[in-house]
Amino acid sequence: MNQAASPLAGIKILDLSQIMAGPYCTMVLADLGAEVIKVEKTGAGDDSREMGPYVNGESTCFAQINRNKQGIALNLKDPEAREVLYELARWADVVVENYRVGVTRSLGVDYETLSRINPRLVYCSISGYGQSGPYAGKGGFDLVAQGMSGIMSMTGEPGGRPLKSGIAIYDVGAGLTAVYAILAACIHQMKTGEGQHVDIALAECGLPWFVWEAAAYFADGTVPQGTGSRHRVSAPYQAFGTRMGFIMIGAANQRTWERLCTDVLERPELVTDPRFVTNSDRLAHIAELEPILEAEFARADAAEWIARCERASVPCGPINDFGQAMQDPHYLARGMVQELDHPVLGTMKTIGIPTKFSRTPGALRTAAPLMGQHTDDVLRRFGVSDDKIAGMRARGVIA
Figure 1 (cartoon, one colour):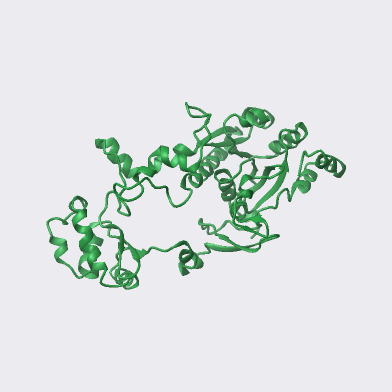
Figure 2: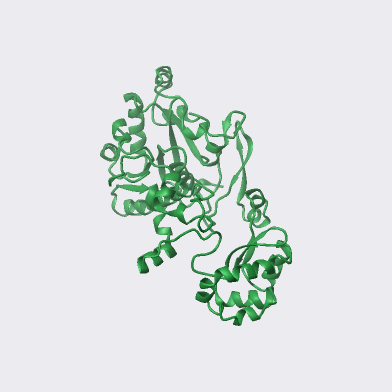
């Protein structure tokens, strides 16, 4: 794939972030064609390099979210390294960082400093609680944000212990929130030539996703609790056990509910049962409806019920484990499992790109960089001589 044909071709990103939220953001931008130069600290580099599993001593965690980037290593505590970074800031359209609030200022790479060098710069900060507010100085992590925002109190079975999401939903969510915020700021930059500071907080990026929960709370003060696999406002829209395996049933409107009863379960009397006539009735009597349906689904295996639902146009699907999902023929046909050649890991599999463009698709071009892999090339590109590069390496300025 020619990078020039990608939707973000020509956008230049200076990535000062590490671990997950920032690197996920810059990976998405890189997948869509932006040129990303990732700066790691000398020594151990990005902290995710210390997270296993490892193959041939290389972190597969780091490799999964740093593809399509060039990697350099700078000791930003050194004035000479900062001068290199300032040159990169002049080149860049966008800077992404996820340091704890105050650290960039102490290093001399904060928005105020870099925007004086490049007034067009879009500078995106991703932090636990944002750049302002009473918690701004605190360190933030995905699970802490899940607890603070309320999502852990509404995940899991009714009356059970608080449970986290199965994935790092706020780290990824903050990265994706940063993506669309950066793109909006870049549109403004293109129109006006003005840069700006974009402030993204893990602890608040997920709050706008609580749509049904906010509707209930702001309407009548209802505080959402755990509902297991049940949907909050539609029934039956949840997981059910079968004779072998679990399935997800999505009878989320009246039409699909009636088809489920008549065409799938062959229990038409459920449609007229006064407890289950409307969606509101079914929600009010879900504790009675659930065992009735569980008993029906226990009569056959998951595959048979899925086939019946598909014939009746009732949304339904398996509850896969991740291994099963990665072998699903639909995901494979849609290119959601890809391979990259990595210099240490060899041929590695990775998740594909979920955004499909008819004219300017994204592409997986290069594997994640080795520690400092492109340091010399990038410095030469910005006019640093080989002798100076050797001296900087000897002094620990670069790696």
